[in-house]
Image 1 (tube, rainbow over the protein chains, first blue to last red):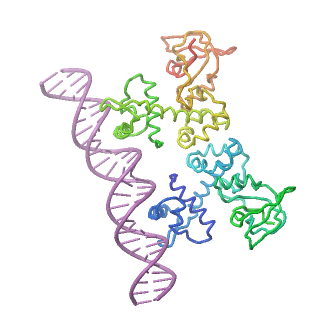
Image 2 (image 1 turned 45 degrees about the horizontal axis):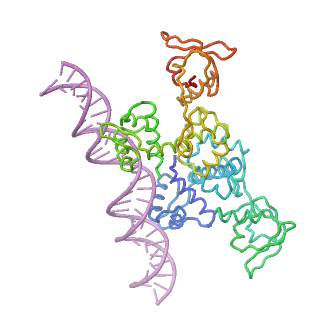
Length: 219
Length: 219
DNA sequence: TCTCTTATTTTGAGTATTCAAAATACAGTT
DNA sequence: AACTGTATTTTGAATACTCAAAATAAGAGA
């Protein structure tokens, strides 16, 4: 029974390992992600290593063990199912649900989670297009490309990797929510922009860094 | 911003003061209600007194201040709205929702609570018939009598004061849920039972202590 | 090899909560 | 008025988490 704090460290470790493709997550990174002083992260990681949730190399960094990854996926499942529930059933704005889920994921019981999963019909993705791990810990595999790296032509938005409310509102306002299909009409490496177009609408530009946060189905 | 622990002490103080009609709640009572050792309760109450949430008389007991009562009603509101939501929207069994709400009441945001309140149409009562305090802290006043003290004749169940899952399942199985109307046909002080009857059904008995936990509208 | 910078670890200390057990106060006998 | 039982308070210690600042290690450059 990990505490909410422990769950947050595991979750952070999991997603940092996804982003940065490094064998070990350095303590500084982790501390920043969790929002604590570096020394605090070191201390906590040593405790987690004792519980065999992480593998820790002093001055090197840490990585989840299989056991730790299992626990992290469990939290992620709760988080994403709650997000989907809040949008689908409760009708909250998808820009707001991340913060809510951040807290509720540590409070929800297995029974309630199960009920929610049933109500939603075992969804595979949350409102941001993030895959929802199954109770077994399995995740539906998908190959996605950032909009910045996708070839010109038609594309279907699959996932938004930045959950900041402002960014999500921008995404929504520009019709870039998951499931939307649009056309990549041009790419300008010099200006660092790509040009997109919705059917029957004027084309518009997106900067490279914003485009990178929008993943589309790989053709 | 009280911690979950503090909220639980305030809630316990509030309901103990309802049940037992005493000016001060003794530390022993409180400790038992919160589930901690007596010394722990004393310690905590002294801290709460410093924060002006309770009035404390050493060797006498404690009672909520106006500020403390406000905070307690706030928790109670969250708890009961969550219960009503879980039964009404999520479809959980009313015997189970108490424990769920016990945890979620400390995790839910004001925004989500507001949304739930709207969805449910500002309910005045939760599934057990307990009144839901309004955001302002007001509670709809009602005069109820225990089934053990109600006069013979027709009666409408309004509130079940014992939230133990087993008892609630018993209540449900015997058609004694809130809103149900039935007839008190007899009262036997010697045998310590009262006899009830649903329209068109055979009468049945209830012991005095069980009957006391079932409140009906006072005629 | 020496030195410097930077990241990491260690140390000392604080908050919030808890318990067990010793000390104390009170109330009710006798 | 002394005695006893019970409830309460105090004390000492533990757990889980945190920070700030001092100490240390490792890599980069001279």
